[in-house]
Length: 328
Ligand code: BYC
Image 1: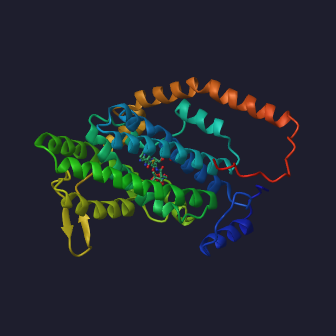
Image 2 (image 1 turned 90 degrees about the vertical axis):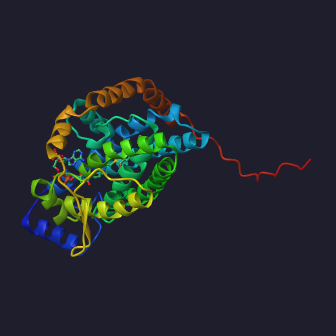
Image 3 (image 1 turned 180 degrees about the horizontal axis):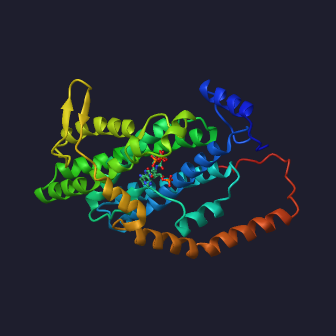
């Protein structure tokens, strides 16, 4: 792609965006658009991969075989989401190795939510219901974003995230109908995960440095606060339906706007987590770096296998029709 920027090129690009056209990797794009997409997609990919850690902790401790199968599948899905997103980001000319180096060096971010611990089995329900629920709101909008590879990756991811949300809600609802101890456990999990989930949507609009450019380029289709409000409106009735209390005494329905008004988010806590001072930042990064190191031999073996496959003469393909095996 010719990278030279001129006012005419920029205007033509903005006109394509305004007309709702989808931008593909080989199309001309301003460097700012490319940089913003790379930042967001790589950050998103890292979040999926780091996001496997808090839930992965519970695979060996799931209470039933059915729950274990569900959790295993969910964690595997998150790995798949990371792969789609790294591929989408690679289409802009940055290699996966470079992106992973940035994560491991601490130069790239991942979602703040994954710096909180999973203390009980009920946390697995709360993550599915709330965290994946928030992801569905955010990613349903990203599925309509202006960059083709990102939007297409989101379509499949959203289908899977919806399933994750439902399995999480089912766990929470089952515990909420259970014994007094189970009800207390699930209420405690929701109390701990509610506010960090609201932080997932990013800082308030007035402090969101990237929103203006992202909204103009139709990468983001709604602001951080609008997405947060949409999520709260969806979630309050779900909590009420199963007798779970959301830990916000100021939560109140505003008939005029049709919104559930919430109390203030602790943005100091959010900033602390982003600075690396959350409850599990060090643990998560250490686990990620260790997994990368321990997987080195697998990457080397895969590369050696691929190199050998490429140098071997292509096998002759048989043209004789294959016969069905005889029935005995
Ligand atoms: N965590 O200008 P702003 C999942 C940073 S994975 C950390 O508003 P933007 C799942 C932001 O990067 C879900 N950092 O940013 C996986 C910026 O700093 P830089 C992950 C955050 O981009 C496994 C600064 O704060 N989803 O669902 O306009 C199991 C100012 O913010 C966060 C995505 O990544 C945060 N929460 O808006 C279960 C979705 N929020 O980079 C579930 C894609 C803000 O300038 N990303 N920051 O140094 C987005 O939609 C947007 O990037 C955000 C932030 C809404 C997150």
